[in-house]
Image (cartoon, rainbow, N blue to C red; front, top):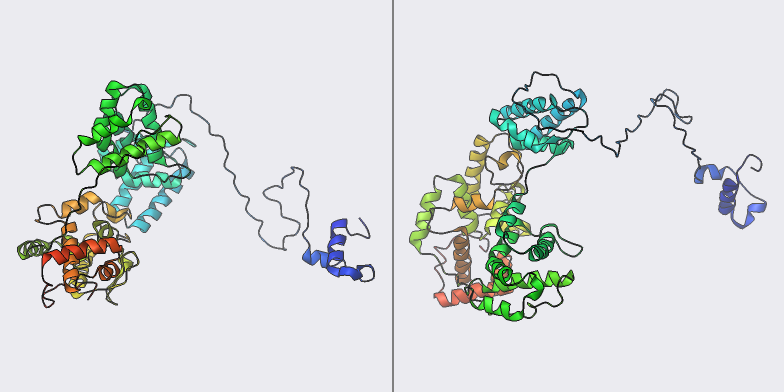
Length: 470
């Protein structure tokens, strides 16, 4: 200390004063521009103490409650029996019970649960809190017992997961399915497949996780190859290039390219993980089958689809989006409410700004009226909802979309192809025009343009649909 000023403060004042600090040194600037350093030797202030620099009359700050990194394990964690538990029993942990009930009310308001659903979910939470003490996680298998009392299992699971007290002990359905499909293979081959499947499921430093549909398709694609290799070899290191080419030669022509791609991915991963010495699938190429040629649909099929969609609001919207705007089934499922501007007559799926025709606008208005009547409290951001997705905020599933067109003479993809071919006929089969209108690549536009050139003369524009290119 020098004249009541510490060395860091004097250095700060000298730095600000510059070269003339010896004759003009203002020590007060250090208190404005400097930073006060405090030495803490482990002595904590009491919760009811007031800081020295606090303003007079100011409320003391609330101390942050730190969560312990340690969890008290149970000596004997038996399965809870909820048959004798009731919602009238007092909770063992009243604080956690109150937090769970508040979280249920918050999710109900956010996702539009009905009052009955909220009441049943809170009743189930009270039953669970009557048999769980402080610090005890709630297992999903325990919550499953509440379904016998008609209580909403998914909603209660969401509340427990949001509160951080859920222990999800449900079996991994994909892992169970993989065990069934790969049963009987040698242990070494199964271990090598587990390495490949682990990267597919969870990703890696330079790999993104693949969807369940992709993993299932890959296993279906090479299941017979794995069975044959398991019968002859004890490890995939013994597989040769001749084994792969001979197996691919006996595969159907339509699945051969996918089968070869899956084998290249499998052995490429094993080579990168240093589980095999050489990649026998490297350089294996098969001829790709000719892609299907899109063709316009007969008028009788379009009439049948229009008659079926007349009394089904959801089908009418899907038919309009696929048959007029040529949206893919995935784009239809993920179309949000803010992407359909009825007042401004614009449709903006995935960044494509298109004019909204009267037929599609009328279909959307009719479906919104049905949706508001069927699920008045839903807050789902997606246009199409179901009984399940109306209160979860998720898009409708692929199975629901496929079932929507079940029994019809055409699919959503065929309606889309018909619309694009019609636009190609009206636009003199210009692939760049098709790519700009429908948002796909020039190669895809060339495919539809060639299909239109083989179809015949341009269609009568007076009877064509009103689409995004209008």
